[in-house]
Length: 296
Image 1 (cartoon, rainbow, N blue to C red):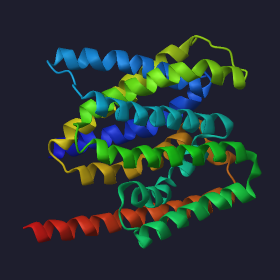
Image 2 (image 1 turned 180 degrees about the vertical axis):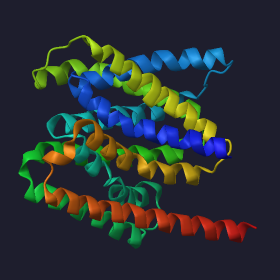
Image 3 (image 1 turned 90 degrees about the horizontal axis):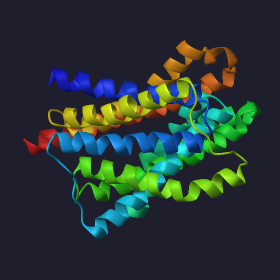
Image 4 (image 1 turned 135 degrees about the vertical axis):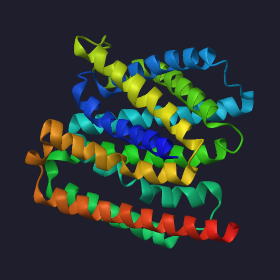
């Protein structure tokens, strides 16, 4: 159990490191994601076959997984666009509004009752983003991209719940990333023309950081999360991933000293967002504890 918890938190830390790499890699956000997916979808089959496993799925499920994969790819493009147009801290603060959009999309898409407390906590996070957006106009474009990223993340998170009822996590992950790569490859030429960015190969250290992003922050993080699931509950995994933006912001402060370029309203907005996330974590823990006691 202890080893599984360590694996889980390494995976969360690696996920938090993706923002730092997004700023480090000089490529346009769309190309960054395209190369990340390319390296990942080449690597995963090698690992699966090496372990005597290859994911199988029905054609009907494959189309659905590919569709969600497209949303994942667009989420990554908008997330890294947010970093490119602002900074890591702003992008991750916006990503933290994921809970607000999930509280709205989940009842609509999965036909569930709206949890008023989740909407209220999500609204608290949105107020935090509004304060940053309203009083610090330097990052407006980055914040807009960040909000789009959070909406897309909420959408694929909710849709994944349905997919995971019929498919295991390895299958969903592999085909989502493959679908995301294929669909992004189709729309990339038109997108690059619209934003007036030429297609280019990574240069210098970009290759190294892309390999780190793909192999460590995607493939290894995925493997560690799946490994941890053998010993800990999905609830624990989901709860732990709430720390991802916190790790990312701390890394941005330490590596890039972003704290020197942020106004006081950022910290007040961040406080509201962390408060909302913390209260939701406490609420989830209490619900999980009660359900565990009832099942005994």
